[in-house]
Image (tube, rainbow, N blue to C red; front, side, top):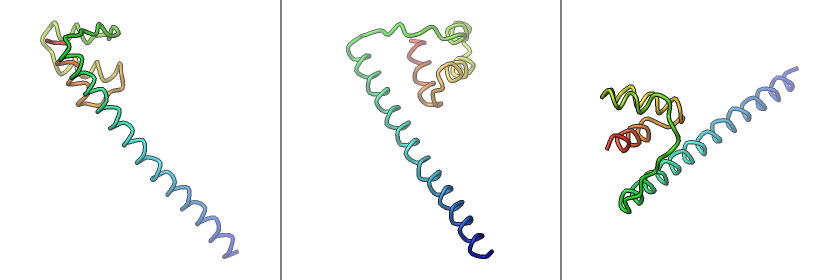
Length: 95
């Protein structure tokens, strides 16, 4: 009985440790992707290339009304971007 309890406890602990280790890799990937997008934006701005981008529901309407916070919120909902990426994108759209 004690051996079975110990085996199940170790199995659960192993699964939890694998989950924690896996989540760190996803965070690193998201950070790297954000850096790539940021650098691509810098290159495009330097070259004067305007990306028409996908139509983002509500973002341009909020910007037209001057409601930047709501525009950032709408951008995040439409794209799943983090706050910094959404803020940078909305500011670029407003220029």
